[in-house]
Image 1 (cartoon, rainbow, N blue to C red):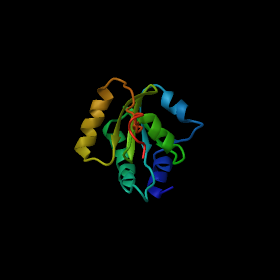
Image 2 (image 1 turned 180 degrees about the vertical axis):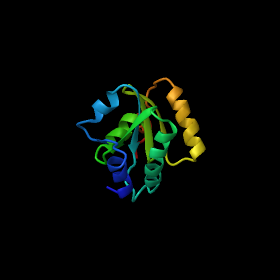
Image 3 (image 1 turned 90 degrees about the horizontal axis):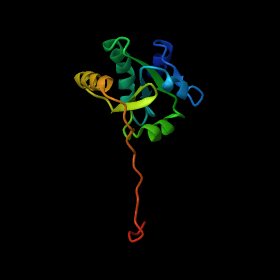
Image 4 (image 1 turned 90 degrees about the vertical axis):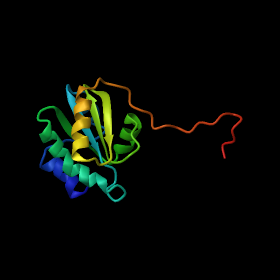
Length: 140
């Protein structure tokens, strides 16, 4: 694990989500954000988001809690919450999906989007989509 991501766990005390503790974290009362960084070698922006995330929690004191998805859990998180861009910050409320902020953003965009998400109702996660063909459409 990259030192900037380890910092989220060690210095800020964010839990590392695994199959064993994911549901307990997600279903806890209140607003939460899940950091799904992806592989830093493939998605170097995840390191930028790892630096920005603690600042976002400071900008909204006490409004939401954060956790880091373990790398082996990330494919399931992507399928469950329907994001297609890495890194992603997935926002939940009382275990229900609220929204996602994909990629790295300008500070003002983060602030506005998080304010909107904290006021938004729960919703259904988007689908990442599966290609479908009809019987008359060749598959190849």
